[in-house]
Image (tube, rainbow, N blue to C red):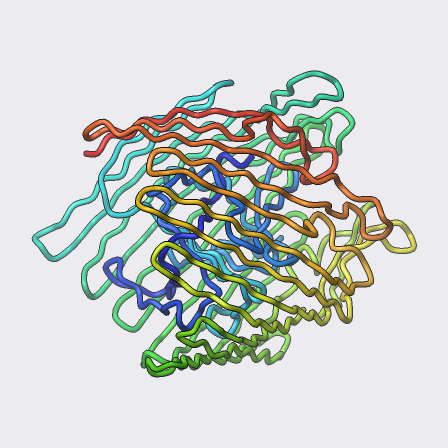
Length: 554
């Protein structure tokens, strides 16, 4: 499951990038303005072996879909961008990170706090931006047990010294093999196949990008679990953007087909479009529209217009930063303002305050009545206020970072069983999460060691926050050719009420890189000790998996 996950490693540079950029150069907001951001250029390390080295970030999984949670939030509350393009599905609010082959993941950036005022609605609890590998031509072939295979190619060129172009393809076949010690057997299901391609053409004045991803996967068949049928899921995702000077247009279209073994198939077509105009560097105007045509929730659309202002202070001892926006949704006639403000200093101390909101998904609003669940068309948007006090300081061989945060939700959307036993979403009036996260990085020449942690010390909620660890930590160490991570996830609630919790677990991952001229050999092992653990009860995570990949520079 994690073989395709993000490499979220605390690197030396910490920048969050604006969604608008030309010729691969986007206006950066430096760490002195957003000190709670982290990023990594994954080609330096292993892009699909480490997934917990950023404090406050935890993997989430449901059936055969991998997501992420930040500081106790749900997957629906985090905005996910690919090359600055929003790619989350408006029907369920998720983005399955498995749909992007690991070879197509380059730089990954994470904003740990909400910033709806700068990045738009549904980024209330954080943001993740995935970028393609750095501009280099390569061919990569991978293999592993149980039929794993991958092949990726990226080719780029400079045209007449004025235009640049890039073209890439990636195919990855990943088996779904689980070790279940209770029944002493390995379970092999349909697995997953991904075919990803992209095209880019640009210059100093414009950038055209288009990507297509086709994937199919089987739903895990686990004895004693939730699913025992040969169900399958097919997804076709198309997204792209066009940036010309001060105008930015992006779109995402997804076709989703769920084919159960003993029931009629269900289909869903969703889309989202954003048109952004930036007359000045500190202001922009955005028109947004999204919609769905689904056999389950029907046909719906919604549109909005938003305006935002951004300010960052002069380079002195203190660096103030501020952004504010207001979104107006036409159908509901609802105005949703958001702000993000704070101040940091050269000494390393910073404070921040942010507000944001999330719209209910179409599943939340319109899920049809079944014997097990029903939607709630009367749901309100959920709102979040977040306060942070932190310290971050870098020295020649040492980096220290620690943050105390408090999150307060109003009208938090959660699914819960009703009096009739049916699950339905409802608004929880007040939910508060208090926590602390941080870490320390050591680096000497080509050697490094990193430790990060998160601890939620107080949670005030009428229901349990299920499947989120109450504490976690990560220890990583290695050199330029060796990388080892030890990841620990603490206890997690598995039910909305009651004390029953999932057991904590610790897993070890290994990566070795051997360069040989224009070629590089990579060997990786995830879950080195073959530890049995679950993120969702009834669905054990994969046991020990190894991969071998050879990269040739073209």
